[in-house]
Length: 371
Ligand SMILES: Cc1cc2nc3c(=O)[nH]c(=O)nc-3n(C[C@H](O)[C@H](O)[C@H](O)COP(=O)(O)O)c2cc1C
Image (cartoon, rainbow, N blue to C red; front, side, top):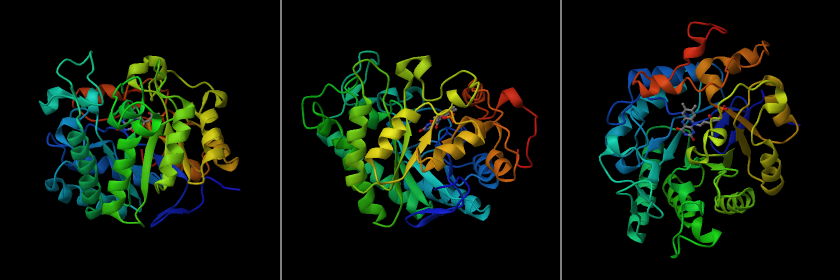
């Protein structure tokens, strides 16, 4: 029987417990995507706060794939020294850190890149968007691989490929975006082709022992989009391709407010926690590789039960750790009160204001020493 506060390992990465800070856009990088002192301080606070693995906010692998301002970048070699300073600081704080590799595809923020968005198929809502041709797909697969190589050089313990939340690799998976009729569209095996090429290319550069994670959606909640059955099949393909662990999420901006990955609305009790619990049960039945579950996990009791009953091998949290970076340490030390987070998504406003992520709702309240 697994427990929340036990040591585990994913290949070369040992972890002090089964908790993960799910990737969260911090809005604290420099304009060119570079690491800043404020960025390092934010992630060091998370490591000190006791979370087993910190996954960075999504880092763009190529300039036109940038999703938002002050987003972390891993688009060129000039980013490596800053990223190395980040991993060094997190390691010195006793933490483990993975880099999330991402491309925003059709939902890229053109105001910041100045480049047209690219995706599987032209998007009528995004004038100027371009469908990738086969050479363009190959170039982006190579960009993911180069980014992974930079991550390894910079000292990250793992990489996570972002294939969820309406980002490029999810757009290819989902028929709501992908209407191609070539080898990258139509049948699920074709829609999964780019993701699998990315996984193979990343594996080729990081080597067999380096942990390679993928974040995927259980479903996207868009009419005609990715279903749980399809996601399960893709998960099987990822396992066969040698992925070391999956993080299961769901939803996307295009699904509307009720099905955003970060659902808005206070979670009133354990029954409302873990949005994708039912899907996770099915994923665990199907997979042998470890599964992390994210989305609406707020109490120690639910986190512990998910792990103990085998619904998930790891629990991942985003907003609760914005509010309380020391939440996991607090639980470990015996203060088992639920997270303060009220899931009002107020943490987005300071990012958009250019100030970086924080929780305005609980400003100034201290619950544990790390907050
Ligand atoms: C401000 C903010 C930024 C986020 N940025 C990312 C991101 O960069 N990559 C990602 O995969 N998910 C991102 N997410 C989604 C979270 O990782 C997580 O899947 C979601 O918030 C649900 O978990 P929670 O209920 O613990 O917050 C973000 C969420 C928030 C609130």
